Length: 186
Length: 191
Image (cartoon, rainbow over all chains, first blue to last red; front, side, top):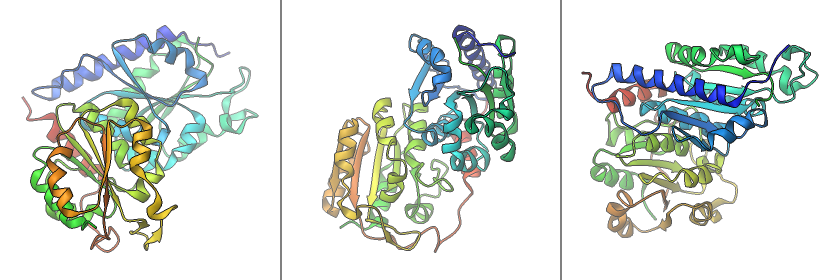
């Protein structure tokens, strides 16, 4: 059965992920950018991950930018990537559906490593997401499959290692990758 | 009324090391005027120029970023005005080439046509400054300021139609090549 993941665990994992990303950049360039923060969260607020977003408000090491749409979040991520800044998108499945053309044009065709954390709002605890009675839950993985976006489920605290793994995968494959947050974070 | 090619030519001469983000009908002329590696064209995701410029401006706070948006393009992601205002990038100049039509697809009127007031919208969203320019002399006089003043600033440029569109003058590098080139340039020489 899936379990909820504590916000603090996700934030610590994000910090480690950003530190690793900064280390890659430092190894690649003579003068990596010096910023007081580790990285960026681009968010269109997601009910499923609201405890993480609330805890991020108190974080100095991670900058959070709330975007009006997931299209903007994805495209802003591309600009940050060109400038050498690591970022993670925190959105909801409905936002993924709303921004499919930008996923295609920016992340896939543009070969930009965009890493998504996608909340599966309304996912039933006792059902596989692909068998959910809610279309917004049921279509998420098939849509990512259709576009060839690698994805994994965060089904509990033991799965947070998938965050840096899929962030790394996005960088290595030069395209999007996603983890799906199965239950509401706590 | 401003001529788009004249506006772009003046910007090319005055931009210094600013990153420029053209889209739609500004793209063909900019390719000729500034064939460099400090520009990235919003192509393949119409409406994204402002958000792309925002990401660049946040990543490169010591460098000016200039977006060449279109009126029809900006309408596609109008919420970006609020997102940009909220992020408060001091180095972002957001130019809107206002001609009232979707020139690339056949010059159909945009919703609201020329009555749409992007200056009011930008001010309402919270941009630090926003104003319109209609005359060439006014543009020439204010260009140095718009490239250096504290942003975010939106300038609504009242222009005629460009001589070329992405449909009549295809070409240029695909977005992924431009993005990689700009990223390499911004990272500086390898150690």
